[in-house]
Length: 182
Image: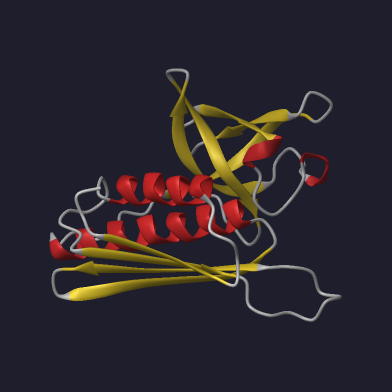
């Protein structure tokens, strides 16, 4: 990492493997935003009642031009999971900050309303007809607030369109007060 990195362990023993893991994660942050002027990572195990178990807390302070980005992730019993969650949050914050500096706004996927036309609940998939008449595949993993067994043919659903295996399909399929276009 080109950026100065400071790693602090509080109330836990220093581990070369853990420090190497933190250095690797910190290096990847520079791919999301450059220049990072400083990075401080604190891993600690706050004193807990002995019956609550041992939980790790991770704090990351990232100095960037004109700002300091702070991520505070508390209370996970696996230090590597706590680090993963903290660095994932740091990546998102750096990406958002970079986007704001460039004057870009976050693009949200366009939502469409369609009708469930065929269901295969035993196989775990179905098809939605868009307003233009084209049909899109979806599977049980693409459902947002329902299950495949709760859907019926003819139900109006909201979804976003994605492309997989060179074909469009529906994802984030949800049911509710959706009205099909007239």
